[in-house]
Image: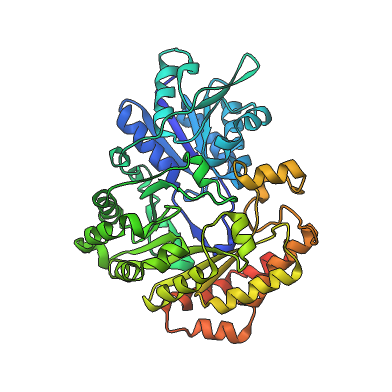
Length: 475
């Protein structure tokens, strides 16, 4: 095997619910940076089909011209087939190319994936950096992959799962993501609805995992029910690196739970000292109870560039929140939105429909609750049984899943019926949520002429992207 590795971000359709955007291939940048540091003799390329406007045919041509020993990609459940297709293309070019896949989806269903897609040689389960590097060393030295922790692969017709790999204890020791390998494309990364077409969009990983155990979420199980954070200084240094080296201005923190309580004060103090705070827009994802319980700290982060916070409100129903194992209350949601609005931070609330007990009446109540809540932006999603979640295991056991097509696992497609609503009816209820929120002429006029710039931009962009029409077509 030669010393070349090609990371591929395949062609894919991005989530139209959030309008028009082009994200960087974050996971591949993180993996590439680690391989580059640990194996400096490796020749590394990243083929970002989105930014480079490459087709499936172009992938084959690039694999043929670069002639890598390894082709690797990673993806979520809705992109699983696209990732498998990358492996298939690589094998068609040269069956000796080693194909390595990872990420949330493949980590949760490695046996199914290896059985369904024989073009996949290895699946890296869980945290990928150390496993990928050790696998490369093993292959180059002709040793047995059975000794590499965190791998799943087929050997002599049998699927082998090696023991799980322990998590990296100190995330500060990881290198910065390898944006220098896609430097020609960095100006193309943008999030129009949030920051405009010409604002460079980059992704920042401040922590990994979550200690909460929401029944529909993959994050806590993927990261072994732990939460690890980089230090406040490392986070600030990394933001500064992205801003100084590549002009990154809109920076999305991937942290599933920002966690003001545990690291907020220290991180605020660190960011306060940096000059770049006036040149950036930070996006956080946070729990409603964390926002509600730390109003002063939330307001302070507005001073250092935090303009947008997304929260999983999920439901108005105590029973549903208990079923989801959220550990939050409806009063938390009201208070959190109030805190954000008073802090001049854009409030973004997420809601879920389609539990087994949902009816037209209960979903209508949720719609009304979402209006009363007063958030700047609301996104409604269909309850989706992602592999690896508590909900997936329950739904599969009880035969609730009516759409097994992973390409539809994007939270915009209904996957399961409820006890009283057919699949098509759940889909229609989702459309009604958006129609009521964004189809109202008075509400749209108020949004377009809002005193908040971000809200004005959102309503104008939402209308231009014809989100309501696209949702209507799913029914």
